[in-house]
Length: 67
Image (cartoon, rainbow, N blue to C red; front, side):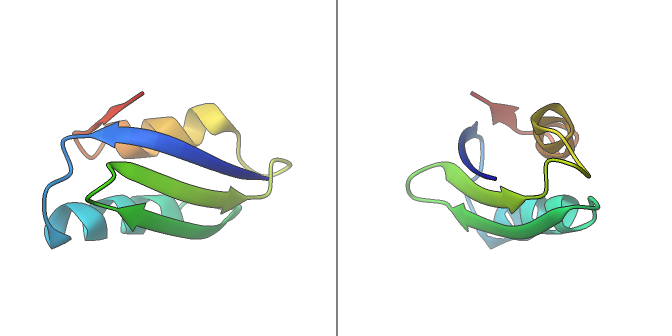
């Protein structure tokens, strides 16, 4: 499954790395592409291994707001 989440608060490469790393640590996420300028993250994941709520939680745990 592929989703795009709008994330507020990402401003720099550190933000990009923090979100990318948090998502890649989740079992089942196969791709996480952060777009700082647009304030969004494109995520490919196996919904049999991880659900959307866990994906959102991983981003929020890094201090960002998911819309």
